[in-house]
Each structure stands twice: as C-alpha cells, then as structure tokens.
Length: 390
Image (tube, rainbow, N blue to C red; front, side, top):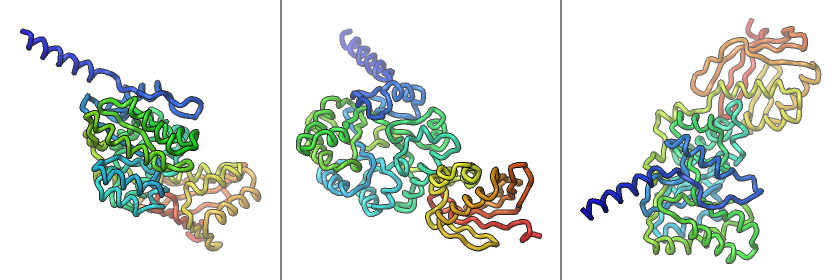
C-alpha cells in the first residue's frame, strides 16, 4: 500500500508540474525597455504550441542560447563550446549572418542550432501594420541563412521579447516557433555597468546559477555592447558548474522536440510577397513627408536598385528618392495607385498603375514590372508608360 501511495504521489507531482504555467524566473531589468514578465507569461499561456519560455517538463537539461551575433567574439565562444562538448542555440541577426558567413557555417558544422533574430534588431511589435516586420526583418534574415547555409530556421526570437498576438498567430501559420527565455543572464547589462570584465563575468555566472531550473532556456549574448568577453568567460565557468548539478545541455529544438529547420514547402510558402512589398512601395510613394520617404526607401529598395523608364536609367536608392521628391514638388497632391491586380510569377510582378493630381485627374498611366532581390527588397522597377504601350 505504501508503494502504491508513493506512485500516486509521483504521478500527482508530475501532473502538477505539467500544468504549472511557464514563467520568467529572473527579475526584469527596470527602465531598460524590456518586455514585462506578465506579457511574456501571458503569451506563453495563450500560445503554448508556438511561444515558449522554457521546456514543458522537469528533465535535468538546459538550453544555452545566444543572441545578436555572429560577431568577432563568437569564435572564442564556439571554441569553448567545442572544448566542452556542448551544443547551443544561436539567435542571429540577418545583417550579421551576411557579414560573418564563415562563423555561421562553422556553428552549423559543429552541430549548433541557428535561428532568426530579425535582420537589424528593431521592436517588431511596432512594425506589424503592412507586414514590414516579416518582409523586411524576418524574411530577409531567412534569405540570409538560405544564402549562407542553404536552409531557413524554424525558430526565431523577437528583439527585446516584443511580439503582438497577431504576429504570433502569423508565425504559427508559417511553421515558425517563437523562443523566449526563462532565465535572463542580463549579461549585456552587467557588462555595461561593470567595467571590470572579471567581475562582470562573475555576476553573469551568479545570475544563471541562482535561477537555473530543469528545462531552462538561458538567455546570453555573443554580440552587441562594448564586448562579449565577460559572457564567454562566464560560459567557461558555468558549463562545469551546471554539469556538477546533474544537468545536461541540449539545443532548443531538442528541448522542445520541434524542428530546427523549415521544410522546402514551408520555405516556398514563406517567401517575401511581391504584392506586400508593392503595397509598402505605394505607401511610401504617396507619403507627403520627404524625410519619412527617404528613411523608408532603403527598407524596400535594394542597395543596387535600378529604375528603368523611357526617360533613362536611375541607379541606387538616393537617385530614385530624388526623382520622387522632384515629382511631388512639381505636382502637389500627387498620388499613385494600382489599376489592375498584381500578376506574380516567381520573383517578378506585373501590374497597371496611374498617377493622379490633387483633383483626381489621371496625368499618367502605364504598366510596371518589379523584380525582388534575395533579401525581399525591390531590385528593379521597369516602367512602361501609356505612350510606349500604344
């Protein structure tokens, strides 16, 4: 009878553990623009199959994760992980993936999981309208990984932890999991506040050791700030200390039993939409404020953008921005709109357009052909006006 009650007790404990809501174990650094624990925990409860703070059970395993790289500090971190036989998960920015492709390839070759951390680290929750958050941040980073290592990750982490519920639903539809954290080392903060690197490293170690728990997802950084040497040093002491407590190390996909890479079908479905990019183009063209237009063109036009028309060829974003400013100065209230649905074939799109003056009178019309670059931005815009088509 005693053994029966022991078994019942263990089953009850497992049931309670499985039903315990996921939570952030470490305090949030105040007044530093971080997402609140309440928001993270609420979204983890509302989207238990897509939005994760920690593993679902009580296995003695830990997932070390590193954000913002790769950087010049990353090879030293990879050296430590290789020496200790530990596999980690790296949430990297697309711009850094393209800047350090050899580091990305090394991490993948050594068995680490690589994942999406946006292209340039904005607050994605402020970019939901118009799909900018996906097309200009996540899809661009997926394209960067595709270019460098030949696949696209199925895991992402939002910068600062901010995502709206609608964005989480969109990720779910795309087969992408949002991975947050249960233990925030605040290594960026301690390295910023403590100039002595040894003391900063010791503080990072102390935070992780204090809040470590079964199936924890630990947040660290391998890029950003003045240096990540204190983080690398902390990892060197943390790995044996964590092992001494009986823990093993796993990657996030192993912890959660989810795919690390998208399938070919998912990749094809998640390609940047020319139609969405075109809508962003229209919004910018019709924006009356030249400063806003200038800031926005670089996000949707590639650096080697070509604008081809009967008047000639313009090369580069500044040249096209100057043309639009000239047109809007000559004709106040200028407005561009589509006259036909977008017909898309691969990375090209054909559509009809017209330009109207402030009174709504059509002053020009024609057909355009757009082409997308690998990062989802427009690389060429060929304009055929009505006179050319007649």
